[in-house]
Image: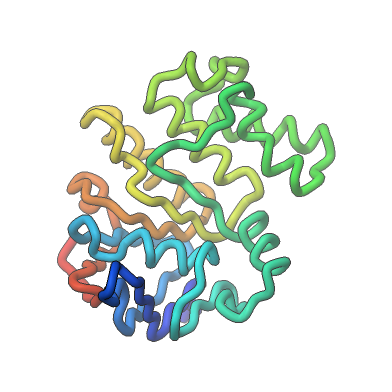
Length: 228
């Protein structure tokens, strides 16, 4: 039987909101397997972004454990987390996060430069990824010359640049119209299959939820399996 790639055990996270403590996550546990697309749904403020940040090592829990590919994320030093986010985990955000002065190709190439990939290898990977996301004819355009859907495609290509094993996406269709959102959903679904990536996606989008292998629902800081 295939071993889980991502293991989340008993995560707890509490924030101070004025004089009150707010429990964002309460003993959250789940597993994600290689090549699986998991959708995490829940109302705004239910803790979806908090959970993704903890899984990807962008924040640390008050209690609990995250393990990716057998390595403890919660126990890593900052240098280990930098390596994890560079080589193992790719991130896609609602706001795209592209560098405005760089072309589509240059944006995709940023993680490859950070990883010190050779120039020829870097150029080939950029070409493959931009073709994969349907932007082979837009390599030299800057973000302001691209539509919102095209910018999100560049962001997805950038997230996959270093061949991560895990893709974390936080409301990736939140700023897109329904037709473009559908295209992005289907692209993520296809990339999970073609690149062998494990994807954990926080979303309100019923279309993306319908494409998921499993759906988990966050409610009042608690996670439960839901019907897809």
